[in-house]
Image (tube, one colour):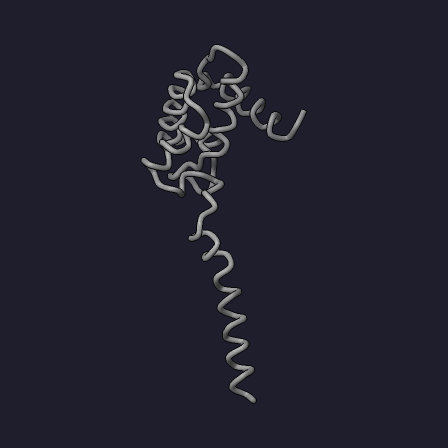
Length: 123
C-alpha cells in the first residue's frame, strides 16, 4: 500500500470512528475526499490539514469538500473553489507561479548580484 493510500485509509478510518466521514457512491470518491482533506490546510490550526484538525472551521471545510465530491466535482475544481474563497494559503502545495519563484530564488539572485558588486568595487 502506498504512503498516500495509507494516509487516506487512516484518515477515513479515524473519521468513521468519529462519525465524520460521509458515505460516497464508490471508492474513487472516498479516495478523492481523503486526498483533498489531507492536502487542504486548516487556517485556524497551526499547520494541520483539515483531515487532522478538530476545529469547527476544518469540519466546515470537510463538509464542503464532501458535498462537492458527492456532486462529482473534480479535484482541480474543488481546490480552485477553495482557493477562490480562502486564498492560496489554504493549500499545502501552492501553485507554482512567478511569485513563488521570486520568493524562493530571489534572495539567492540578490546575494549573487551583491557579491558581484562588492567584488567589482574592490578592484
